[in-house]
Amino acid sequence: MNSLDLVHVFCGPTGHHGNPLAVVRDAPRTHPTPSSRQALARELGLSETVFVDDPERGVLDIYTPTTRLPFAGHPLVGAAWLLDIEVLELSVGDVVARQDGEFTWITARADWAPPRTLRQYATVREVDALPAPPPGEGWLYAWAWEDEAAGRVRARAFPRRDDGIAEDEATGAAALLLTAELGRALNIRQGKGSQLLTAPGPGGLIEIGGRVRFAEHPRP
Image (cartoon, rainbow, N blue to C red; front, side, top):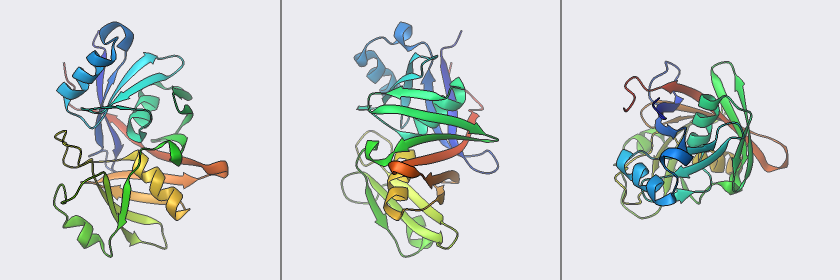
């Protein structure tokens, strides 16, 4: 049985776009060591690859092409949808997940997210006009209000970490940070047409949700 699934996370309203995610279901058998996991993540070249160490408890291990991450948003939403479980176990803490119609939600803390530079632009046009990636160093989340009263945001994300990923299509961790900074629910349109929904809750917790779909042409 193929132990690797490819899904798109935070798809748009029509089911298109979303950030590709590889999920390795039988990780302890197929990729038992950190070096083998890093090698596969580098080979796949996706923004993140998630390794499932225990599907019943939701124990996960997340890698970019160049590093291991203690937390990342789109891998958790994708894994929660694929595994259909209510709790994901990470080193930073337990992440609660739920299904609500076509949306999969996780609840997490913004301070679990890796640092990001959140840079507001005056108009959506300015965000759309940015090259991929813009000049500079460090992880950049560029955003502008589409409709401030309605909480609608236009965003683009640029890792700028020399791993071949010029632009991240949908970024849950950055959406958590922006929600914490603004202190309100957001409807984010990111990348080419992905959609992320967020809602702040009590005690510094934030929910983030989106649609997940299997890729049309999964990897062998």
